[in-house]
Image (cartoon, rainbow, N blue to C red; front, side, top):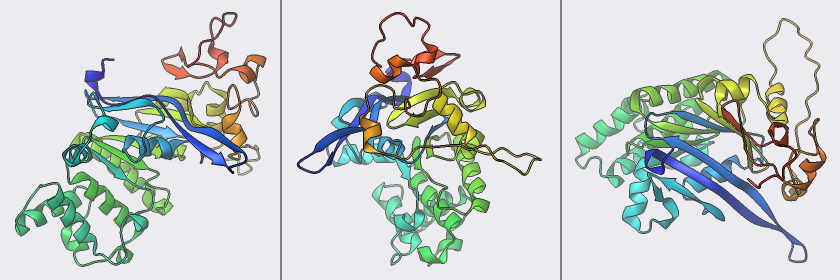
Length: 335
């Protein structure tokens, strides 16, 4: 797809960090050659899923210009976001790309009224000047997430529930009329009874307000429920990506299968005894040569230890696994 048809594209993006003491330092790739894109043709929800430490949040921070990639380029509307300098450029970018963070109680100061955040956002993005117009804009944003200005007026963050406060976070993000929301684990700090209300809200925003959403999560149940496409991350790399029905319904990569099997399905049998072993994040796993899943893969081959596999286009999705190399006797190419 031509870049001019893309709302955003992370193009072979990597982020390297140096860890260790001054006597023994090493570099790890928190994000390793990740490519992810979203079309301008229709809004969609793209999930980036994986275990804690897989690189999901680092990728989100690069997409929000909070971190600069070590390698690769992130485009928004065909423009390199890290080449746009100056206040006007930053405000233009922020008007179109807005974040929704994990913990709403860390997003808002306990000493500041919730409505003040909304008012400042309206004024800073020049959506209204006069008080009645500002109030109307605030109320409009709040009503789009199932609240109203009357419900939050004069209240501080601790006077709202976690679900209400996360809805206020989304309302605040909607005030500039963005085209894209980057939602980093937006339901992980919300009670289970309220998670579906936030997830359904994202569906409504996509359908009614034409907002695309990059949904960062480790919760495969909600990912399956709301996503159009999904990318599974393992130690910085996307190991499988494509239509959510295919990737989660019939995963191909051994890690995707393990991740899917770690979610117990509803069953009449109360004894769910299958043991699933997920990883403990360690620096050596990131710096390991070859595929990052070799230590746990039941189908590991000799070549898996030697070189990281490229992406293979299989059944309408991309799978980073030598099991799907249809030319196994030819030298592999780097991803």
